[in-house]
Image 1 (cartoon, rainbow, N blue to C red):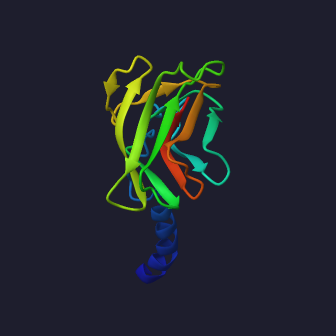
Image 2: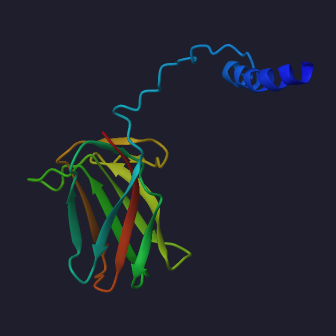
Length: 166
């Protein structure tokens, strides 16, 4: 009799245990406010290219507001940098190229694949050298890359920026 009773209760008991589970009480999940990523963009790579076989200067108009660091070197993609200088001029006035926020000059380095930053100055001629700070630039402002001094028809250089668009 006990055996017959155990056969009847065993499946019922197994079902009851499976339904109840381990007995742990289910509580509300802890909620924390999500971190807001609104209006935050990851920096993107922005490349300015100057090809001496096409032109001795290149004007780039910014499509929207951004912040950037001044590159400490330019990549040389083709040609010789011997006795060559590349200037990058920021926020150039469209009617008067002598009016700008600041400009930086790059010269030949020990590596033939790059040119290094030698100095930066504002339009008053005051020197500064800062490749750490973020500089703001507004939509519609221009960045001009140009060869200074010797003719450079064989030289192709790129300035690579990490832009934080706003």
